[in-house]
Image (tube, rainbow, N blue to C red; front, side, top):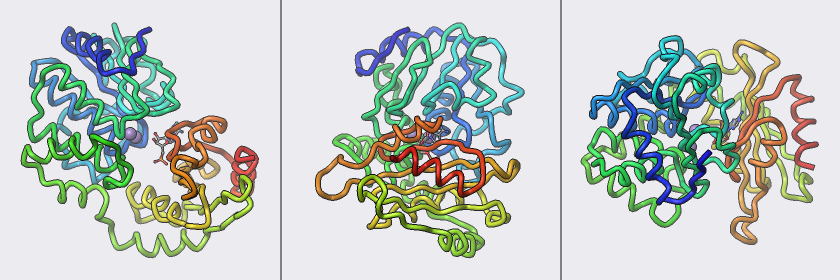
Amino acid sequence: MTTMRETAGLDTAVAALDAARSVTIVCHVQPDADTIGSGLALALVLHGRGVAVQVSFAEPAELPVSMRSLPGVRHLVAPAEVRAEVDLLVAVDCGSAGRLGALADRLAGAATTLVIDHHRSNTCFGAINVVDPAAESTTSLIARLLDAWGVPIDADVAHCLYAGLVTDTGSFRWVRPGTHELAERLLATGIDGAHIARTLMDTHPFGWLPMLSRVLGTAQLVPEVRGGVGLVYAFVRRDDIDDVRSEEIESVIDIVRTTAEAGIAAVFKQSRVVPDRWTVSLRSRDSGASAGDGVDVAEVATSLGGGGHRFAAGYTAHGAPEDLIGALLTALG
Ligand code: AMP
Ligand code: MN
Ligand code: MN
């Protein structure tokens, strides 16, 4: 197993991509714009080079509406259509094999596997792993990979890369030196950054507003958690989400996490199909006393069977609301 956290190590990944005649790209379950943007960007490049490429994600059955205008969606196939055997399987934005969902079984049929990801909790489950927890998005790593490969970034590829960059940085809130430089490079190809951001993040049906009203009404503040860091949480119940999309459900945490009195935020999202199954979003913020002193929620989520980044993580839990919050409070200690 080769694990590379250095840009120089990209050469091994490039060699694997260069040699492959058939490639499967797997995005994570409940896909976001970073995993889909990474997958489609890579697919556009590979297709342009005459490689037989398929992109897929295990669930849900449909691509979120906000991502359907990304270039390259024609390379997406249903999980059942994903070839069993392939030269190379690439997992994008997946911290563990479990994030591939039912498509994890395709790892075995690939001659080689490449993991491209930026999760701190990454298990390096590929034969080749390009994992950089300092990268702001997986699409940033794809940009680095294309540079190492000597492949120019055209407007369609830039559109896909920008989609992951603008969403995973929270509209350029969580940035580092180089983030804006990449954004500038992508924008210089002529893509419409404002339109991409509005489509992905700032467009909701009217039903979002009454949904938010009900969900935010469940919010609770527990100031004493972690010696006074504080937890704020809310529940998104099945009955609240009849007429909204995943985009509206995923937006809730971005409101809840702004609570000044809490360093940790959690949103419990009930499954539409299995009522006692909940996916949980965790966020953490600095106290303001010193930068980077926020609680590591990737650690908390990992202890509960999930994973993620230091300031944004998640897991899946089963049970009644009281049990869920009880388990989280215990894990937070
Ligand atoms: P979310 O709250 O769904 O936006 O997830 C926040 C971060 O945690 C993302 O980077 C996810 O990839 C990661 N994450 C969420 N759920 C899980 C899970 N069940 N297992 C591993 N990582 C997760
Ligand atoms: Mn993701
Ligand atoms: Mn990501």
